[in-house]
Image (cartoon, rainbow, N blue to C red):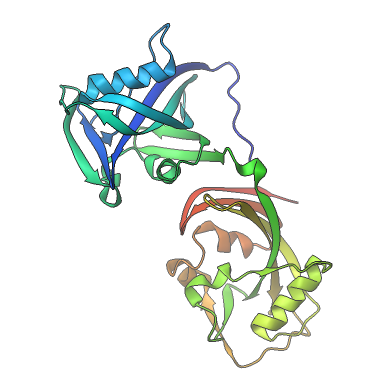
Length: 315
């Protein structure tokens, strides 16, 4: 479903990062020198020659905050790439909640503080942190790639969960009704406008996708037409669900339709306003859909937060 980047002729530097937890808190240190200076972070560094990655992770925790790791679990591997560099920084990410000793600040990491997880200082951490941190909290193994222009500008990311290949696939449909740059929303009481584009219908056994789209159109809009056009196939993966939703998105363009019959129970919205209302978690989706050119898309989502999104033309 996702293609992971390949790095032929790239060298690699092995790094570790350990995140330490206690109940609903996380221990972070402020980096005072070197890479990541001025950012809050977990504890880690480079793997020394003839040192295992696990041993390096434990050593770095001891050196940077004084604690001894009793047990830890590797959750993720992240490839960090910088534009113009032929070296991949391969980071091995650990979860630790069993440790002993006293916290000791160092010249490299100070201050060191416990934060409530919900109050983590994301604005002063690495940009990529918010994209993979949900998997750490839920202990969902993953592999990721983050491409940086510089330390403060990330230009691409790919995240693949280790259990994706074992997830079942469900086929759903959704139909969008448009007119020029506007989208139609029904006033049905059971539809929450803020969840408009998440209001999918599952394709029934023995039902064609096209017939499911026509059924959706009649059920949700009370529109009768034979003109529906499939524009997108969207795969939505929620990180903690055992299935992937494959949603076939159809579009009915009322401005070009000659036989669509509308009820009075609707209203039109400009798509720019809908994006402001966050009716779809990714700002690019509606504008891409309205171009009326076939495409595929993939979204990895935790709650309402998009952790990874990819678009591919399907012409």
